[in-house]
Amino acid sequence: MKELDIHKIRADFPILSREVYGKPLVYFDNAATTQKPQCVMDKINEMYTTVNANVHRGVHFLSQAATDEHEASRRTVQEFINAASSNEIVFTRGATESINLVASSFCRDFCREGDELVITAMEHHSNIVPWQLQCDYYGLKLEVVPINAEGELILDELEKKITSRTKLIAVTHISNVLGTVNPISRIVEIAHRHDIPVLIDAAQSVQHRKVDVREIDCDFLVFSSHKVYGPTGVGVLYGKEKWLDALSPYQGGGEMISSVSFQKTTFNSLPFKFEAGTPDFVGTAALASALRYITSIGLENIDLYEHELLRYATEKLLAVSGLRILGNAADKSSVISFLVDGIHPYDMGTLLDKMGIAVRTGHHCAEPLMRELGVEGTVRASFAFYNTKEEIDMLISGIQRIVQMFR
Ligand code: PMP
Image 1 (spheres, rainbow, N blue to C red):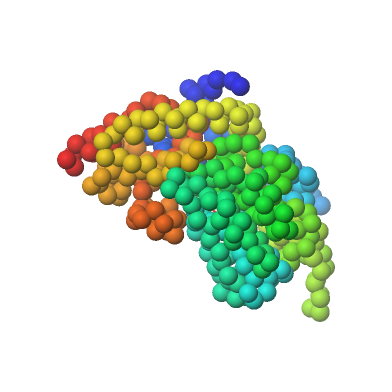
Image 2: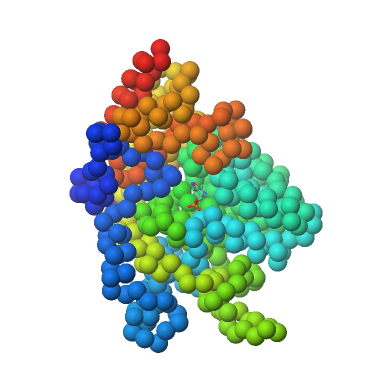
């Protein structure tokens, strides 16, 4: 383990030195999107300046160079999550599109009327609505695993939800609202005992801790580039080769075909079967650059440092009178949702913003969870490894000033 040089790290993120309303920016909305290190922006510039050409299509030099870069990025992602083969890495537009891809192809190929899908009460809309669309279309049933008062999944209830009609379990690794880290290896173990595949929504986890798909043994895993310090518009779908092989294509177009005639089209091999149209090869190169950047810092170091921020912030927040934290799981990541008696989350967020402090307010794309918690919304502060205890002190004194204003 090495101590992070936060001063040096912050210098890698130009946006962190800007001011908002004449105040230094304190960026605590990392669960929504992360800021970008200079190397990611440089990579985008380099790609357009020196390599730009369409991939997989041309015999010319630049097209080969762009293709090499794009496929090298795929291998970087493969290594990052320890997939067995780069054929198991499909590039998409984001975690949302990755889930829609699996939901659409899996339900079409493997589900019949009356079959069941299992999700949890703490899912993001992106891991609810794609399944609901399929449920409506094919007459499937969506089962929901409840949570306890601490915001942890009730695993016994998961076991109870599994029936002979259960076809797939989709669960988030880390809740974007509660910060709860779910025991995904245990969930996969339970599911596999019943021969049920599992999709892991890792949109909130790959940026915080080492995720090893072979160790977890999940069947599918998804994440978004923009939450892991990469560019927007790129996402990853990991799928075990046996599953990706078995699934029908999601979208049709160039790249995903082997041959086309008006009578019959045959499809390309993995992973191209799922990548219709020109991929964002500039984005994938920049994502690879982001992954190399955080790998060089070390996810174990990031995890430790962010845990210290979480511990520090939790202790300080709980000392504010009338403040309560929603989500107190034993295993928690660096997301804190809170409410202060008598202060609407929107007011809290707006006033903090005027102090230069960016937090999230609202339902965080998890309306069913809000209903479960009996609240309309929360204030959410989410940390990254470039944040500091001094910034947390600024948040706390900001909240205290707002509390004074309202009392
Ligand atoms: N799942 C979780 C847990 C998330 O937090 C998010 C983003 N807030 C998503 C899925 C969707 O990610 P994207 O919008 O990048 O597709």
